[in-house]
Image (cartoon, rainbow, N blue to C red; front, side, top):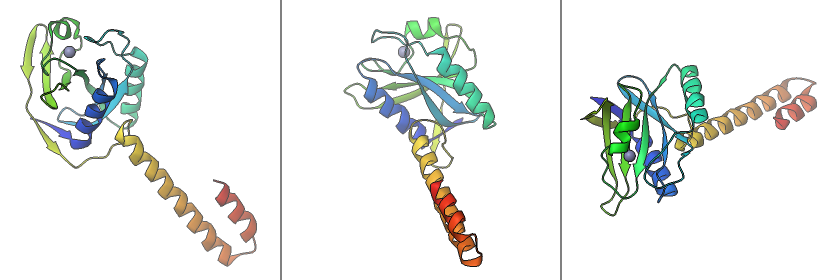
Length: 181
Ligand SMILES: [Zn+2]
């Protein structure tokens, strides 16, 4: 059983809606048991029925994931019109045996999210559960979380500046410096 942190599905869904009627695509980041983040990638295919992840986005996602002690564990893409099941093209073009494939259907039936492994020509659906726990620091909604962390740090710095200011003669300079940050 794979666990997916809930915001990942929200992010992928948002991406799918934004790019429709084209297919969106991206990377899934996490561990063998848990998908904690998604990273948007450019779809190099012009059409509306297939996707090709920009290799530069793929490489960057691998590098960023490693820096967080995580891995790129799979891929996601959308099916703007068809059900969330791997197409013949998806099966034919899936390299990376063992990778997870999240497919989001955004047709009139409402959102449909399904997870698969594709091994050669064999498609296996993978059960998953959702959790609210987990930190997101990638792109998508993770970016917003990162932004607020940075703002929090800044306000801490300002508070420290004022503490120093009450204690010593360097007040003015320190306060200007910290305020500039
Ligand atoms: Zn597909």
